[in-house]
Length: 544
Image 1 (cartoon, rainbow, N blue to C red):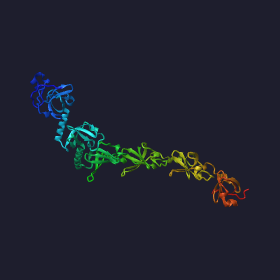
Image 2 (tube, helix red, strand yellow):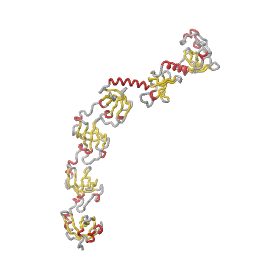
Image 3 (cartoon, rainbow, N blue to C red):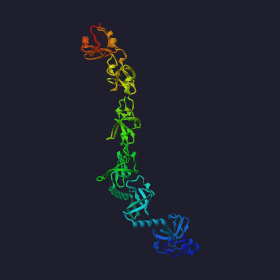
Image 4 (tube, helix red, strand yellow):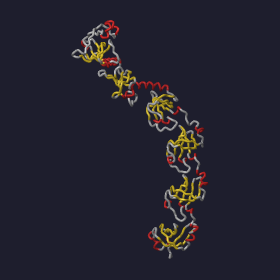
């Protein structure tokens, strides 16, 4: 479409509405009084930038007169302004001159070209520029510095940002690191600017850094042994042991990456460029006045925070922990590992046994916070009292019987039977079997109770054996054991006698193991009863 209007001579400034009205009367807003001049033919070639004036509006287009034989249209969306009044001076690019004389114009392309010319004319590689981050594109960000330029993701920050999209809408300062004028391509780096600033800050920081200073920093990296803090040019190490007076299992429990934190300068090695930082040093050391708060012998409640093979660590307050050794956990049990008694998180009562101020260590006792059952053991279990309990454990020398929770007594193999020789309690009992025994002895100091089973009945060596087994008494018994010097024979309810080879017939004496087998019945007679040693001698000779 072409709208022709009368022309007037104007200066290069924007023609004001008042001037139009003065020249053409009240209908001036329908006319254009801007004289652009004819110019040469090259002025209107495609890609050329020309100056024109808004002469009208048509649908969604702005009609612009550039002095050509016909006006051209520019999409209204290419103007930033909501309203574009007639007479507004604009620069546009001739996109196309059609054979019929119509013009295709673009303000946006003209602005872009003018912007590139201005940027390229005013800047070179190495210069700093400022611009607003427009959007995220493949590999980085698009930044508007008058024209859109590329900021690679690797150049956004000192460390590669997890999400460069966080910078959208921010105004950033960057250094031009590459200009390709032909392709209209500029690459910038914010990282270079930050590195230069960091270098300057480092130089200034080194001059003013002193041990004991309070400094602001940002958590830069976290490892198993601590966190590295950016002090604004220099990195310092905040070791895990300097994070808290209390227990810290991992630095991430105290700090996180990107966190702004105030720390204390503990040490600075200028030659090696190493800075040691502290966080706990900002607060009072809880070990100050520890003796007044936790006197020896006092009892306190705490929480189990860690278990080791040798004991449990109990937290009394923030920064104060004590060790309960396995030997101090129970009066009645032999604890081999603390998890037999407690678990992490348990609330326990413990007594202060010892404080090592130099090593900052506290020894605690859990059993000392309770009554010692062994203090009254003799009152509860006097000698001769019958007790009933379960078999908890067995060894070669006897069985341990639990007489009350945590209190066990030993039933020795020699106190199981008056007559039978017991080599192991497992031949007589089973684990958890209930037995009734007699208390033989209490050793409070060594915390031992001796029990007897055979003492529950009369001693047959005193009451029965002397009467029933006189010399010459014939017996029928079973072989229980065969040796090269003789054979043991059970002659009465577990009572064994020895048939020596000298008391065998000639055939059996020559080879007892071949002549007699275990379980075999044999006829013997008593030839000797020794009540003192409790031994019985037997013979096969002259047995009727």
